Image (tube, rainbow over the protein chains, first blue to last red):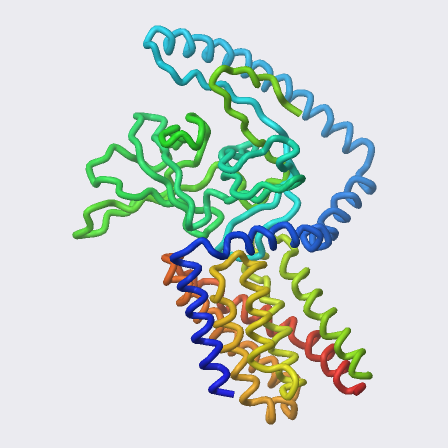
Length: 272
Length: 157
């Protein structure tokens, strides 16, 4: 038994080393992501039955109240969008005056979560949009509250997205109040991000709102990332540790938005 | 149960464990979700040590690596190391009472989670020991159902 265990330990250590230093296993992982879709479908049956049951059992008067509330919310949001449109137009004029090249216009596509990674450390989602909907690798994903992550694998009718809380994910951010830039990294914890390499003299306070800075070109600028939760000064450390609470409901949101960004704005208005 | 029936039951239990592992949970339920694949591996090794051993644990570990999107090899190492303990003790474990086997599983899961966190540190994934006790407790609570099921399958031989 022990000899066999030693052989397995040696093989698994070799596999881990290969996985760490090469991309040889990527096709296998991608194939398995595709093959796993029916299992995800079966695993989410209880959740879907629960939703369906709630819909069937909900009282008509409750639905009417909810409908009224949603109409009121829609009205408020429309008003806010009108103000935003005015600001966006002003922003565009100022960018033109500055000869800025990045005239980014975003459009969105609604998508639904059809599966989540069962691991506490690997934060990925399966969504029901794929190459047939023009989804691409690196595409940002939002929920109603903020940025959720980005697409890492695309299949015909579904995709896999990496969440911003995954420990392998990092996103350039800036503080809304003063524009100070930093990098927010995932911590493998659904309700926590961490800012790296923040100088002790940086103007950053608890409660500061963070938005994507757009640096690197992967994520569009201005989407909410989270708010500063805690700032820790460790004696002797060169940098301070800043904890951030994500704005998006990372482990709860079911309906998400895929953001399409085009430089000429031709896709604006594309929404489903 | 005939050998072919046991084989079918084996496949069904593995598939069931994989599907249960994929059931999405959020909030505090994350802290209570046992590793069903590991529990099934422990169960089969306890009740069929002559048939299912290190190789079986390693193969299920590979499946877990792909399901969890973990570095390939991590769960192979974890499952085979953890599986070696009940394999070594299998001669005694079948004579333990259910309560004692639950206690054994509780301790084994604590060991497995500590080992998993230590292995993940190699990829700079921050260790989180806060949920180890809750997961071990949830596994011990779930264990009687797995124990009874596998006992029933293997008694019918």
